[in-house]
Length: 139
Ligand code: CMP
Image (cartoon, rainbow, N blue to C red; front, side):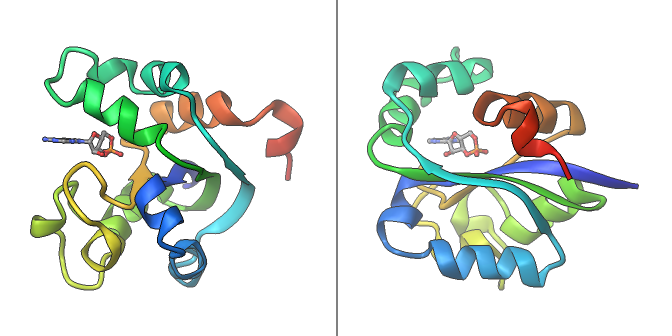
């Protein structure tokens, strides 16, 4: 079925000027842009977004990193969006990411890994709602 996923272009990739190339890869892979903006998370907002990871050892660093600079947030639509998008971005750790994936091409480390992709339809909806209001998601 056609569904939606949520993505961020993280501070490392945005700051390095890779947003255009990354969005192009997403569009060429068939993802339609539904909502898109550049914004910046505060440490508090990053903490809220990544609340599911709050017991993880990397949580504090992750919140500092994700609030260290501007990002792009976007909702994308495609057939089988969540799963296909995770294939397009590659493994969390760029050292393990497949050739041709966005993380293989642009990620700097397991933390500064260029992009985010939702891991389920449910989380895609929750994450999209975090950044965009209802009328920004109308098609
Ligand atoms: P993402 O999958 O988008 O959401 C959780 C983020 O936490 C992940 O990307 C990385 O940015 C970061 N992360 C995950 N695992 C680690 C780790 N082992 N060390 C540091 N950061 C991590």
